[in-house]
Amino acid sequence: MADQVEIHPNKLSWLLNERIGKNFNEFINSYRIEYIKHLALDPKNRHISLIGLAYESGFNSKTVFNTYFKKETGMTPKEFLKQNA
Image 1 (cartoon, one colour):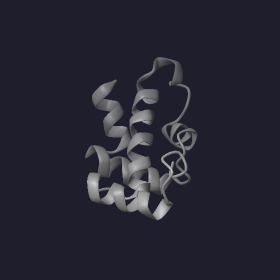
Image 2 (cartoon, one colour):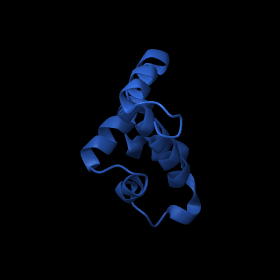
Image 3 (tube, rainbow, N blue to C red):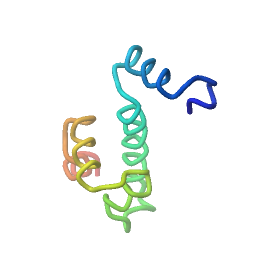
Image 4 (cartoon, one colour):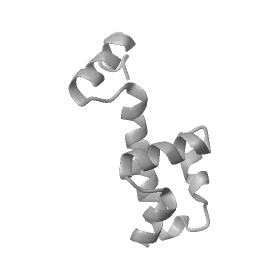
């Protein structure tokens, strides 16, 4: 991403913190969460577990996924599915 906007990665991280209030990982994970929510609600993906969707979206661990999902949405992934199913 830093290469695309032609700035040093540290400067990109600083800008994200300064303007958005999120570090680089939080910024990227927020997009991953939105993507997972979209995938989870698509009937074509009902055969894929939430953790499978998380790995597909770029999360490397179940703990990071669950923790960040709750931080970003205020609910667990399971609660999200129940509310939106």
